[in-house]
Image (cartoon, rainbow, N blue to C red; front, side, top):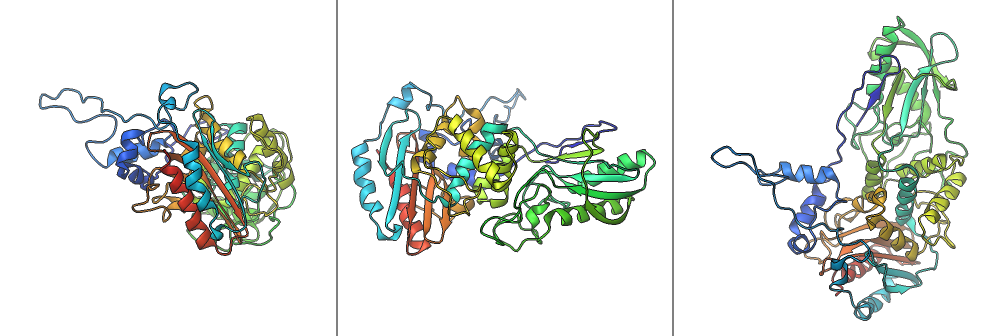
Length: 488
């Protein structure tokens, strides 16, 4: 969504934010056993999923049609919540406990699969009680690849809250006839009329509001500066130029993508900030504002009242999009936003310290962990499976509702995101398992949650190293996850 604000007229313009994840709903709906035992309509589910599913049928949603007499519709029955029983001491949480010995017997031979390489770590816990159901090297810090995004998400949500939005503003410049486009680090910012990756900050709307404000003040010609100084340090990730990540700046539209893609690898621009400013200048011209010269770097005057503002997708939506699609650009932006909220420099180094501090404040063990980046592309990252399952349990805790998007953003096995084709079809994990994948050459990981046959929510994490081939390692990890799904 683009919520726009005008510093002069103060006319609020807003649209309702939605993130549609229909395939996730379909997966959960098709899993009849899981629906009966635990229900997909839990309090942590994305609201847009429920609303979208309700729109498919007159029998869905919060109520049904009235009777022949035209009386008001009656409230529809709801399945019990997936996360309703995860509170400490809950009666439902005590029933149907998983047998740790039986789970160990199922997991040990699967962990011995040579396809997983020669270094393996595993952790499985009951999120309701915190009971360790299985572990092997659970405190050994290893390269996590993209499963580190679980940590990035939890840190950002703890620092800023799920409703936080990132601002991109236009302010008057230092001199007459000057304006400055100031970036706040919004990874959802787009220059397209229809956002390819979903709702978020809009340069199109920002240009319309800016043009209206300028014309209202009798101005139709400006010089344009742009300010991306909010982020500091290197803009290039330590891995160098890579199609999986644009240069990290505080002013980037469409993740520096040259096409309409919203996720996945593609060659990125070398100058995200400059390209964004030039796109904004073109949008102003379309709306009757002449921009003299080329946009140039400038500093937005301290305390200047914005002419116009556009807001990012709420942080909860950014987290969900990041986890579902394994979006590296969003991950690095969220790590820097965590640094800013913590009073640290918005750099790779500042973000690493801020994420570490925030996770420690949640009460999880960060010993031996290193958060060299937010995305997991850096091989010097280190986390443990115990840390990952600990964070997933924190996100499931009713006392920490601000962390719930960590769970709702995880891809659904067999249906959405990076798990769309994994544990699909007749797999016992299809539709009931949510997990974050991780893949680097020789490194494969999987961490997430699953509703077991008794309706208990279990958290699991598997990290491996030196695997001979990604395909074989992924299949072996999927077998491990399916074994957790059928644990009893």
